[in-house]
Every structure is written in C-alpha cells, then in structure tokens.
Image 1 (cartoon, chains in turn green, blue):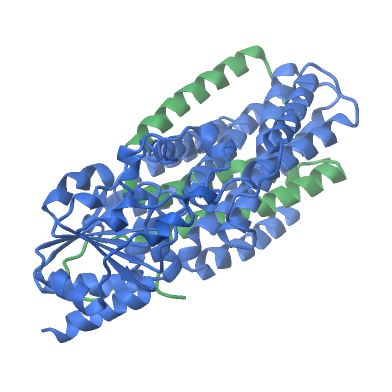
Image 2 (cartoon, each protein chain N blue to C red; image 1 turned 180 degrees about the vertical axis):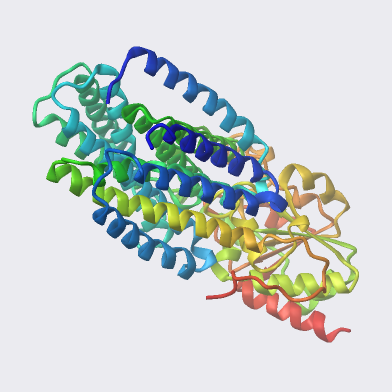
Length: 111
Length: 458
C-alpha cells in the first residue's frame, strides 16, 4: 500500500477527532451501564478482524502471513462474537419495572 | 468494488459512533448494540469484497471457529463471571492485534517507513502486553491464581527494565534497524511485561485494571489503523481507547488513588499491624428476627452491596427482600459505589440480573445526601467503601477515598461473616458505632432468614 506524508497527517486528524468524540460520548454514559459499555467498546475494537481478513485471504501471501492472519482472525472473531452477545445479554436484564408486576422474560436467568 | 469500499467503511464508522452514543441510557442501549453489530457486519463484508482478498476458504473456517468458541463463551458463562469473560475477551482481541502487527512486520521489513514502524511498534507492544495481562487478570478473577498481590523484592525495577527494553527495541526498529533478533525479543519483552504488570495487583483493584486493558486494546487497534492506513480501525480503536481510559480514571478517582499507585503500589497486602488488638473491641450484633423487625418498621432503607454479595450469590434473596419490603410500604434504594465489585458497573449488572429495576440503583453522588434521612443503611458484602476512616484518618491507606455515607443513617446494619478487614487491610470504624448492628453470617443465608421473617409477619 502506498503511503504519503499527506495520508498520515489526515489519519492523525481523524484519530484526534475520534478521541475527542469518544471522550464526549463516553462521558455521557450512565454509570449503570459501565459494564456493558466496556464489553461493547471492546467488541467494537475487535475491528481488527478487518486486518485479519486481508492477511488470511490475500493473494500471494507467505505461509507465515497466512498462519498469523488465520489465528488473528479466529481470536478477533471470538472477541467480536462474545463481546456483542454478552453486551446484549446484559442489557436485556436492565429494566424499569413497577414492583410486584409480572415476572420477567429474561434470558439472563441462573445457569 | 474498491470504489464503494470507503463508503461501506464510513457507514460502519457511523454505526460504531451511534452504538457508543446510545449507550448513554438503558432505554436506547440495546438499539446501540444492534447498530454496532450492523457496523461490524458491514466492515466484515466490505473487507471480504476487497480486490486483494481472493482466498475465502480459510477466512470462513476462521470465522466459523471463532463463532463456535465465542457464542458458547457469551451464553454459557454465568453472569457472575462477566468480569472474567470481559478479561479473556480483551486477551483475544489484543492477541489478534499483536499477531496482525507481527505479520505486517515481516511483510514490510526491511524497508518500512519510520512512521509505519513506529505505529507498528505501538500496536504490537500494546497488543502483546494486553494479551498476557488480560490472561493473568482472567486467572485472578477466576481464582485460578491467588487474588492477593504477589510481590517480591525489586519487582517494580524488574518490570521497568523489561518495559524499557521493549520500548528501546521499538525505538531502534522505528529508527530503521532490523536485525533478525530484534522483533522476537521485542515481542517476548512485551508479553513478559504484561505478566509482570498484573501479577502484583490485588483483586479489588481489578476494576481499574480491566478498564485500562480495555483502553490499551483499543489504542493497539487504533495504531493498527495507522499501519494499514485504515481509518475505520483508527476510529473504532480510538473510541474504545477513550472509553477504557475514561472508565479507569473514574475508578481511580473513586478510590482517590493514582494510576501509579494502582499499578505499582501492590495495594492490599495484609497489614500485620492492625491484626490483634482491634479484634477485641466490642460490637453489637443482632439476629435475623430483630433485623427483619427493624427493616419492616422503617420507611426508608438503603442497601449497599459489595463484592461479598457477588461471592455469596445473595442478589436473588436480596430481590425477594426488596419485593417484600416494598410491598410493606418501605422505600428501598440501592447505593452503588463506583469500585464495588471486580469491574466498573459490576453491582448494577448483578442487581439487574436479579430483576431489581434500574431506577432503584443510585450512584454515590446521587444518594449520599439521603443517608441522614434513611432509617436503615444495610451493608451487604461491602467494606472499605463504607469505612468512615477514609474521611477522618489522614494516614489510612484509604484516606480521601470518597465513601458511601452509611454511617450517617439512623441505624446501620452490616451483614458479614466475621470481623476480618477488607481489601485495604484496615479495621472499619463503622462496625464499632453505637447505632451499628452486626449481622454475622453468610450473606445469602442471612438475607433468606430475613425474607422468611418478613414473609411470615404479614
């Protein structure tokens, strides 16, 4: 891939803006949801799958690249799948409910 | 296809940003997860359609294996194991990041540009250290490893030498050196530092550690974005990096301690000095019957859960007690300290699992003003976060730590197995106050007895 200095500068601007945006967004998250926030943001950062897919499927990749890419793709997929599913499982449990009302439809029961 | 790709990536980024935005309230949070999932799906499909991707068989096998491990991991782990699950999930993500960096290194050597090599060093250093650090954190949370800090003489010196070595190698590689031994040594030093970093940190400091590891995994992904010149990675990584950092800052503030103190202070070693004499001081105790009668006669009760509640699995019994008291006209609220438990927000998840409505869960600043008007503050498995010494004793290890003002309630009840000190290793003045009743026993058992009393009294 071709890199020019202009690209880096552009990338740095994007990183700077994304950091500020992330800060402002996360500041507003209710402390109630700190755990789901952590698992969701973790699932999002498993966007490393993108890099792993390219390495695994690239034309003319060396054996080393292919093997490393394959392992990375497996672990990143675990991170994505487990991250999103556990976040959703937790969020299903957060409900506003008048005391004494009907029983729950939670999937987060005892295991 | 390659002309459409940037737009698919932009849509994916929008999905991630909205996902984080909608996490701000429980009513929109699930929508956030769905949009985040759509973003991820777009990113994966978009990448598979890229021109340079030609071999699909290994991609699909890897996706299948990853899902086959990830799905049961998310659904079969009990809710009480969420801290472990998140720790191991960090390890997987960070390992992916480190391995991709490694593959990239061997692809672009010996002629990487300095900028790319610098980003690559940051990516792999953070990726490798987060992997091992998360595995150790997992081991401690799962109690495979001892949860008390493991320390030895000169430990911080050793840690710094290892980290320093990795950083120096990273800088040399960035400067253009590419001896064959350098990268492997750099990787091993990074892995080793992860182990050295977390081994001396105690269980109750895990909320900060997990949040920090969350952040470093994100920063690693962000650095990877610079290596691959991929803006989607930069944005997603930066969002996660700030989320983790902000959470860990909140955790540190909630303990009035610095990062350095949490990471290198080996906090929570048993303090010998406070052992013998303190145990002799008199306390008042009460039976479940007495406790139930007091609770039933109250108009406001504030329950303060801590890690002990999670260990005893008492949250379901507490829900029953909450239901009965509410039915008897008692106003029951929950006071949640930011660092209660083993990860940020741990208590909220456990109480929500037990089906306690989230509008009854209050954070420290919201509820502290209400303690003077509360008839009972009921402490279940919390200790240091209600210790008034944090306010009065300047020399105590928890000096200046913001606490829940349980001692200002009219009556204080503490469910506890015995008089052992909490994580900070110091005595809790709360237990010796005149208005404090110690309820000795297992949290789950004791609350069940209270529930039985409350149930039969009407």
